[in-house]
Image 1: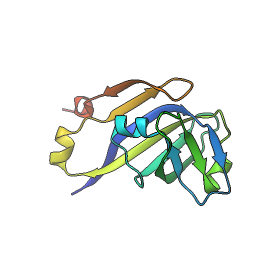
Image 2 (image 1 turned 30 degrees about the vertical axis):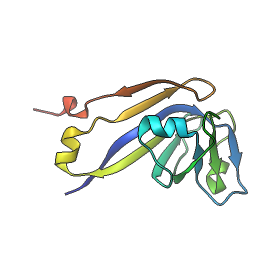
Image 3 (image 1 turned 180 degrees about the horizontal axis):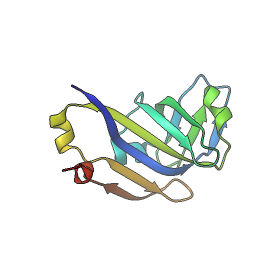
Image 4 (image 1 turned 90 degrees about the horizontal axis):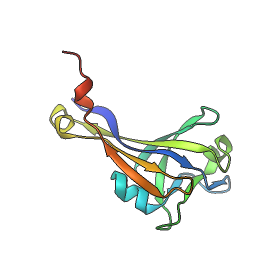
Length: 128
C-alpha cells in the first residue's frame, strides 16, 4: 500500500507576486526547491497564514537567487503580495520508503532566502 505523506515544505515564505493572468501554478526560486527536493511540475498544497486559504497547484522554476514565490492563475485571488504561505509537498510512499524518509523543512527570511533546513524523524511520534 502507498500512503501520501509529507515529503518536504517551505515554511512561511513571502508571496512576492500574485499573477491572475497566468494559466496556473506557483513559481519558486530553485534554491528553495533544491534545498527541499521539490521539482518543477510536482504537486503542492499551499496554506496562506494570513487568511487560512488553502489550494493545490504545481511548481514552476523561478529565477535562481530571486526569492520568487509567485502565485499564478486563479489561486492568485487567494493571496496578496506580502502574505506568508506554507508550501507543502507530499509523496506516495510504501512502508519501507517511509521507514527511511525524513521530511525536510526549509526556513526562510523575509526575502525568501534560505536560513536553515530542518529534517525530522516522523516515526518518533508513533504510538507504542
